[in-house]
Image (cartoon, rainbow, N blue to C red; front, top):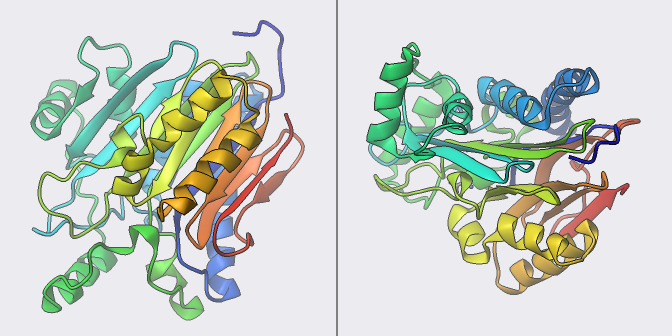
Length: 323
Ligand code: GLY
């Protein structure tokens, strides 16, 4: 904790993927992201902790069926939804999460509960037991749209390697609700006490085999210390191979600026032909984002104004503000 009150900072994402075709699509995604930024930044400015802000932001994004987390999660190869979520508090440098959990509205709530548990990462069976123990009502996150997509893919004998987590389907403006912003969600916050936190939640790639584990509930996809905090999106296997979130944070700890850490890490990711994106903050208040995929659906509040990454150039790009 810095001890000196600072301006809170906030960045969120709703996934990464292919080109947002049509302004209708981009605008719909922007509105969804800005709503969350406004609500979460308001509680941050009133003194909420980074961890509380991250949980609130993740819940709001999980509740938006546009995004592939919580309600609106994609289905796996057997037609089931299995979600993963993680929370890392930078001040305590503590990670918690659930892997392949089902029948819960907000997987991030389980991750938050586990912050103070002895056993902090639970997989499917353990997370179901925890739900029962906490008496959290059962909830079906399935939407009609995701079901229809799965049925359609099943007819094609699962020709696709994954669903639209990386949004490889083109966004058609007249059909923006059905295809916009499919992907992991993530929130990174710096509170007015200088504390950082990161949270990430996902329905996975979609159509994956049973038991596949996402990056989102690993330090590869979600990591925070006192120095920096990162949430990733994109193809989980690519994120794990780069160990992207932890890699960026450690570079900052070792002395690189957040922006330089992003540039170096994304240059390497591009050389390794990865398909991914990330958002982050550091303790100085610098905000950064990067991607190798065509688009990154991210928005931020820098203490003065809201901005987003929806118009970033296609291909590898890194950006940032402040610090
Ligand atoms: N990044 C989400 C996943 O691949 O599961």
